[in-house]
Length: 184
Image 1 (cartoon, rainbow, N blue to C red):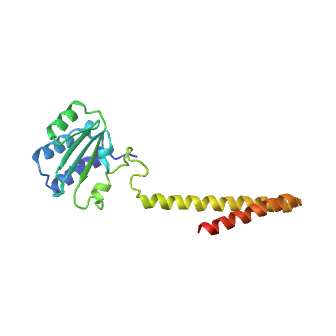
Image 2 (cartoon, helix red, strand yellow):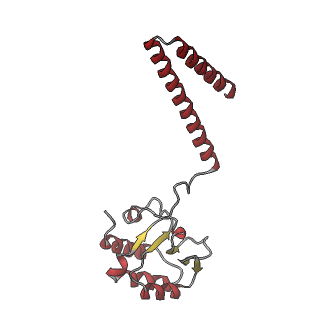
Image 3 (tube, rainbow, N blue to C red):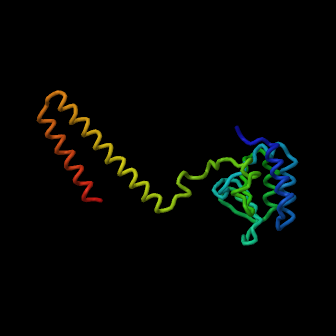
């Protein structure tokens, strides 16, 4: 189930009541969105909105040089009026919104309206060390899988009394186990 327009409306009101934006045009834009049900239906609050084809990022962080950014088809503007006109002219287009404020990752109010970002790559938050760890886990898993397959083949050879297959699979298992020792 998605986030209702009422939940979005409550969040925007809460945000406007609790955080001061740098430019009044940003407040006007949020109030415009707030009052239009059909626009609210197409608004989705996400993290990493800059990855979306049409998005707004609003920040109250004093360290951010651009408190407002509007993205549309790989074009970025800090002009709130351009965003307003595009939203007004294209109210049925999906819009992704990210609001950056102190404690936004811990905010219950924000969490209630957050949705998954469909444009966020699965590995977006992974670091190089994570890839190395994943590779090691996959290698270890593959090694254990090969061992289990060989043990099953050895058991089967014993069950049917096939000495030749037993010797073949046992040698292969021994070689596999020794190769792992040298890698460690």
